[in-house]
Amino acid sequence: MRRTRFAALALAVLAAASLAVPARALAQATPAPGPFRPVPGVKDAVTHHTVTIGGRAIRYTARAGTILLRDGENEPVASMFYVAYTADGADTRTRPVTFFWNGGPGSSTIWLHMGSFAPVRVEVPKNATQPGPNPPLLDNPQSLLDVSDLVFVDAVGTGWSTLVAHGKGSDFYGVDEDAKAFEQFIQRYVTRNGRWQSPKFLFGESYGTTRAANVVNLLQGDGMAVNGVVLLSTALDFNILAIGQQGPGEDYVYEGYLPTEAAVAWYHHKVPGNPPDLARFVAEVRAFAGGPYAQALMRGDLLDDATRAQIVAKLHAYTGLDEGYIQKANLRIEPARFEQELLRGEGRNIGRFDGRYSGDEIDPNGTFPSYDPSDTMASAAFVTAFNHYAHDVLHYNDERPYDVLDFGVNGAWKLQRGQDSNAASVVADLKSAIVQNPSLHVLSANGYFDLATAFFATEYELNHMGLNADQRKRLHYAYFPSGHEVYLNHDALVQFKADMVQFYHEAGVR
Image 1 (tube, rainbow, N blue to C red):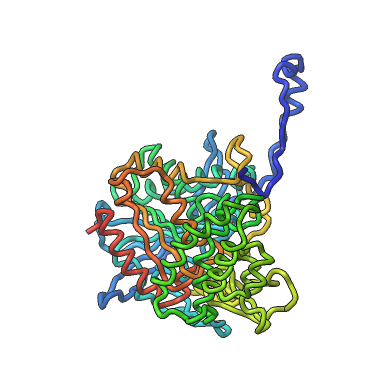
Image 2: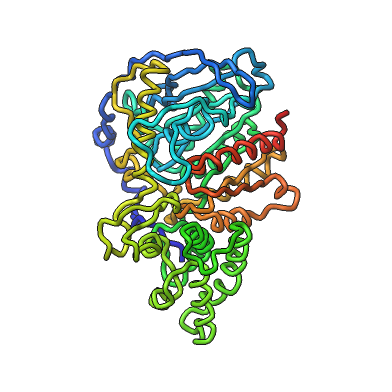
């Protein structure tokens, strides 16, 4: 049985009863509009710059600004903040444009913006150690501006994107509501900037992949074909994520996350023998996770002692965890507990978003980590760099605090779709887009050390879309020695840039 983190609420509606209600009573029952929020009176900021990529100097224009979203009566309901980078003098009829966003839900796009393919990038150590105060903001030779114009967008309720007029959070804080907002943003941006003929790409990270799969299907259904979608650290089906929703007999989370746990153990030299080739080691664990391990878990309480012992030995060999711990866990290694257990003997925990990171544990006897070192160690660097960049380089004069990660938005998010009480899945949306657009290509980008969205679980989702052989040829994969935010490892970013250039070529860009 599939489960969700949220309780289902059944509402009984007696349609006939409303027929006897006087019109005046109906008018009185109509909800009053929400509070009025003025549109932020901040002008778009336009600046001009040059960046050198691959030995070639590229002159470009940066525009930091907003686009108003409107409801069915053409009334403003939200203002979405974005920063766009466009190469000067390019032919917009053939020049691609790529829209980037992070996820959360409730996260701004500061991470992709300051860390990945924009013309500037905050410098963080590639070896998963904490950056010092005020790390430098550098020109980014791995920027994609030599291939595509770039637009980084913040979701409503994050960054400087906000509700306006009588807009309500419930109109935006949900899987489908959010996707419709981004669809409208893209349509308005494309119209305002004359980009209807441009090749178009979507790039989502984490929950942003949920959004991307939904948005591409909406756009294509409304007549805007998309050339390519990049899914970085994929979350297409919340029922397969390690968020504590699995019940008895629902073992795909343990199977899906085992290769990632093994990769993290390998990184920290906890795998007996420490195999030299990570990719080959991971391939071996994949085969075990989808074969003998899955078969053993399927047998549940009927698993015989001899097979159990073999599975325990293999799990120890792949993760380095104590065999007694594995026995007590009933062969099922919860990813969050793994983060606490792997380095427990050293008094340290490891990062959920990036298992390369580790930190001193506040509660050495705790069951789960008290914090995520891969989050806390990098966040200050990104926040400091972005605020300096937006105000002092782009000269965008919004004095409101930039809302990096809004937990209120996250807590209000509706993960269910329509009347479906299960947690969200957008696998069908992505399939629909691929099947209906024979020119659409999809790139699945994965970090080996990502304990938030495991690469083997992602492969499972994408391999169960029911695509034919020709459609599967338009599905591409890339793997990196990094975590959820692949770009935190600069060596991985260099590889990612090369893979992205190849992906644009595969999707028809020359």
